[in-house]
Length: 94
Image (tube, rainbow, N blue to C red; front, side):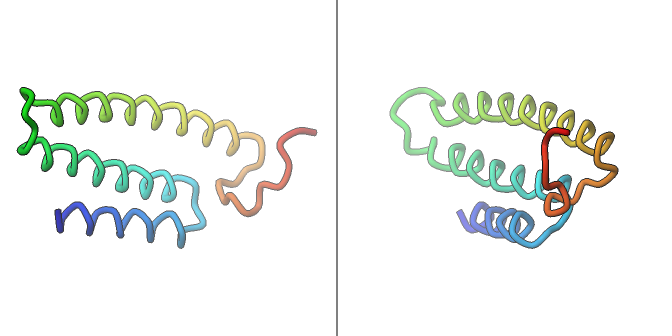
């Protein structure tokens, strides 16, 4: 639980303090990994067979898909704006 709390705090710091879209995405992934670690830790007390591990596996798959979509969006934003700083992107269409 302490490792999970530390991962979540590191991810929250990364999201709130960085000015780079990729570093913000890494911070979000740290927070997701902290939640997945909690699922696995609390599955020890689960009465069903491996409920936490099953949910953690689905969360990992969904997180991987979300990262792929987010990286594609970041690359398209970079191609159009020539920056990945979220504060400098002020309009989404011409």
